[in-house]
Image 1 (cartoon, rainbow, N blue to C red):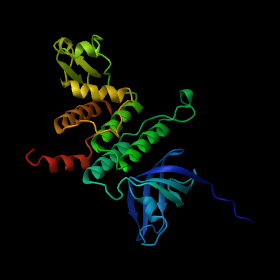
Image 2: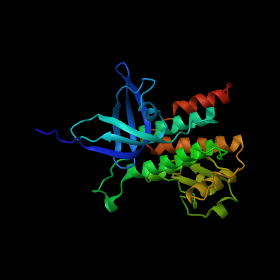
Image 3: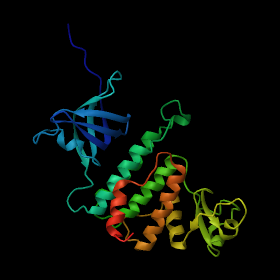
Length: 276
């Protein structure tokens, strides 16, 4: 009697997390382009000469070949190749921290739904993979002068994928356009969904949030319009970076279930600000 062939798949994948298994094997959580989240076991991947060893490094984009048996929760990683390694030669501590932060967010804040039953066959995990793919490719390029800004764009796109992008085209309460809002005191309110003008921030029943600078508004507008060129050396001093990071952190914490500040960013913040 012949042996039936085992179902298998091949897909571009992002390695999210790994766990040791037994003496030499590794279990890895993958976000794949074509099959959503897949958990695989890489047999003997911790052996020095294993051909699977390079395929289970967190943060790498890989072309993975694995079993696809619906009766199994854990699939077998069979082979593949490394497409992008964001922590290759020339990478920095910041690169590592922002990469680990992104992986933690993807693992914790998974979009719901997807598949052919959704309207217009929209698959949120495929959209999430595209966001991750773009971030990893930017981070892997040594021509990217601001890994922090690339991470903020990633966070913005994560909100977009969940249908929760901040509103920066005008005051969310009265609709006043940014050109007029910028002449007044501007605020950024997670509770109100984005930009708030000074008058509305003082109104009854409006959560004012925190002040928003014109420079930060311009960065947010570029993110919303997808017109931010991360290859350009954009003036991005530490106060502006801290402001944008704080606004996005507060917005994500308010709107995204399961969100918390990634541990890697906590360590990076503590290293840069030891008196905090």
